[in-house]
Image (cartoon, rainbow over the protein chains, first blue to last red):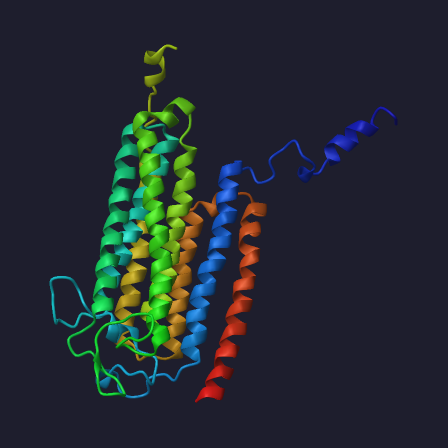
Length: 249
Length: 108
């Protein structure tokens, strides 16, 4: 009895009592997951605030093709975001954001391919796919810069305000597209996401440099690629939600 | 330190099947986005269209999180540790949409 007791104690030992890794993931990866969870809450807060404020304003009731921007009701996004670079004056609703979505999805794919190459210790492939990911991120940022520029400067018609003056574009106080809060939310939500893309590109560049100089090859594993990969996919994930809740609905 | 030894890391051959699967998921994400884009201009705006959009978004989110972020292949406890806290988001949606409705009733 006295002999067998320690054995049963050993087998009954809970996985949470130490000595093993219950999540079977490294500290860094686990912390990245929990950071992303908290970040998901931040983005949910912003997007749900959008829903809350939109819901507290009247919706546009008339026929869709007769839509005109007004401070009196919330705008229909496909009527606002209809411009594409080099195609001035052509009504192409949501096409440009659609392209941006594709760019971000593609850069997410090149990121998984980099992770996959990392598992195989293939430095040449990791370098190649990291470079494509960085390029995708930069292209997305450039698109967003154009989008913001267009939003801020506005259309040729502008909006006739109640005091008779015409206002073009948008700032945090007034915008030609709808209630002031619409532009504020545009700047906050796409801006906060853009900041994430920007920092993601920055981190990717650092990791890319480390790959090229062989830091991970010497370390014996490319787990760092997986960690930044998680962050990069999260940025893509958030954009999927922004695309739906800000641009489509 | 002998540097010649360190630089000689032999990469393993690429797993064609695995890479093909990644591109297939990318294609799914692209196609779902294209469907959303198509529906935006072929269906009347309303609760039905919005529900379809939200469902398709969740499909995309599932593929990104489970395959790209590899969550599907982690241990169960990790999956639940990440998934369960998101119920707070659902609570916030319900709370704030109800709040938005009341603000609308007061203002307009």
